[in-house]
Length: 100
Image 1 (tube, one colour):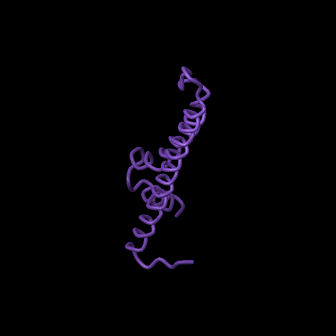
Image 2 (cartoon, rainbow, N blue to C red):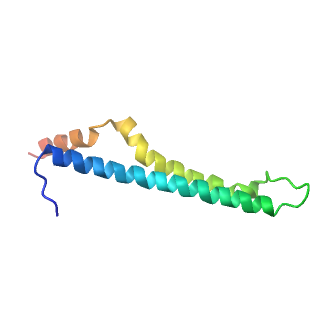
Image 3 (tube, rainbow, N blue to C red):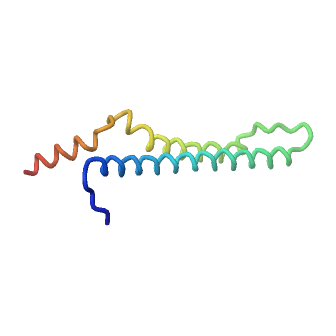
């Protein structure tokens, strides 16, 4: 277990945690794009002459995985906008004061 010496250590650990979340989202986004491009490529290869690609069954993965990706993105980016930068720190102080 790491021993936190000062505020710089705390800020570093918070930044490290944030970077880990961002990295996870960007990896998820990259895989989403690559897999869906592969699915589109495979589906286009299997089209019969004159058949349209734009059928609902060709967009099921894109749509539902997209909802999951949107939720992941919101969990990474929205708390910063909704709750503010130092919300967690303020809430911790508030709860500590209440429990004294």
